[in-house]
Image 1 (cartoon, chains in turn blue, orange):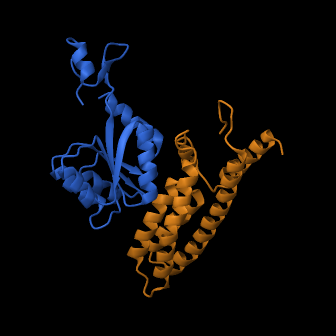
Image 2 (cartoon, chains in turn blue, yellow):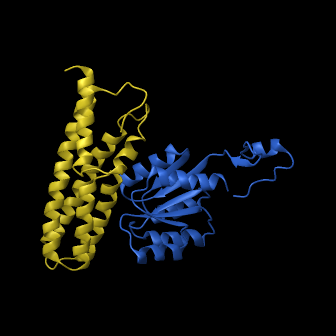
Image 3 (cartoon, chains in turn orange, green):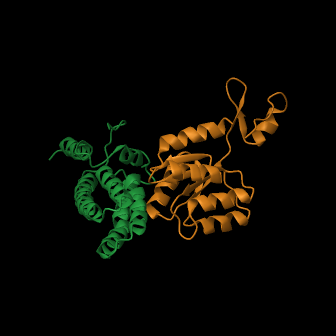
Length: 150
Length: 150
């Protein structure tokens, strides 16, 4: 996310969802949104709760196809969390298709079992980060800090 | 029993779950998501975990009865199980899941069966201890001090 110029028109910046920090730079105060794509109900609830604890409005869907259908309606999300194991279409293929739609959201791959091959497959498909489950609040907080500070 | 003594008993019971290696840091992260709006979040998630994972346990049991064993299917079930177990901080259960998957990769059916028996024991033990802990915690009520020692 590009920070606006701080030279002119502070009010316009604030309207765009940025507020001045102490050193005069602008940091984003807008609400972030996330989509969790995971068919495990426990992971759905926990990942949603963790994101919401960081102030991120979150929805979840249980399959890659549901995610693509939702994105095709024009729904947009700052963050999309994708599991490896999904019904019908796995997380890697889902990622590939999301990127093929031109969607530039931050994509986080999450999986219960780390292996190098899986990580590479996800990275090649277009995820920004690969995380071994469980997703934890500290990791999400660090990602949010990065996103908020541009 | 006076209130302070009851709170100490709850705290000791909770600590023993970590000392015995049954739970890990993820459980603490979930506790930190609890607030006035969701005071029983952890208990609800754990209850859901046991309800949902019963289905997976049954699937794995049935798959282990077949001959020849379908290691890819077993691995996929266990991958999912590991995801939700790790998301609630079930440390020993998660370790057994990892071991099971190693046996799957090695095509070792006996290893899978043996590990699964151990996994079910750990799963049942954790359930029993968490049920006792949550029951006592509910009876005693929340700690009223400003800072809750972890």
